[in-house]
Length: 225
Image (cartoon, rainbow, N blue to C red; front, side, top):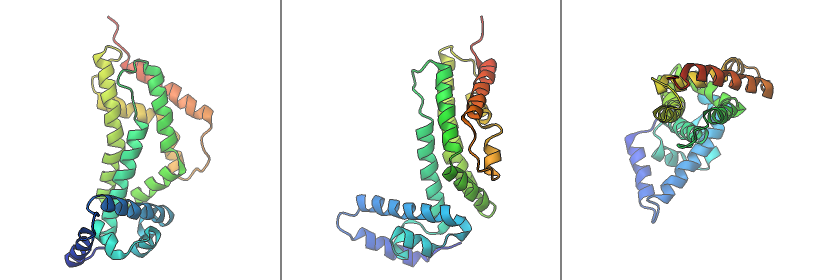
């Protein structure tokens, strides 16, 4: 684990604190600068191949400045996971509370979800996380909670509201949300994770979405009185 001493970290924090007007804006800007540089290095070199030296050069900061914000490479990567996955989940799982057109809402979500999930950058990032999690299981846990869990929770809340309105009949919204997302990616995601660089045809995507929605509504459509 790449870390520095408490004394060095304290000195770096002191330097930041003594910069006039740097309490909040400066901290946020510099932290983002470091994370942007780290993102480029991690995606290019992987977790094990990324060095602190490469990261500070890419970010345009000193090692002391980096360590003032992140005490180790693992903590920096963890912060990057949380930021990127949370942003993606919030962008993808945007569901209008009053949208009662279940089929279209699920189709839009499924299409956006697959566009994100199957993007080369996302696939590369997930491979890096999987590799790093062998040595640092916490990274895999953080990824799961910030990405898949966060997105599933948002979809589950939507399904729960539709059930309250009588438009669906979902006893376990969390389970139903996971099932729908798993059906959307069936046969595509694992194939691409294992190295298939050929993007799926639009017909395959549409076929997956049609089937996922059909099966989902067969299981969770409104109960007939």
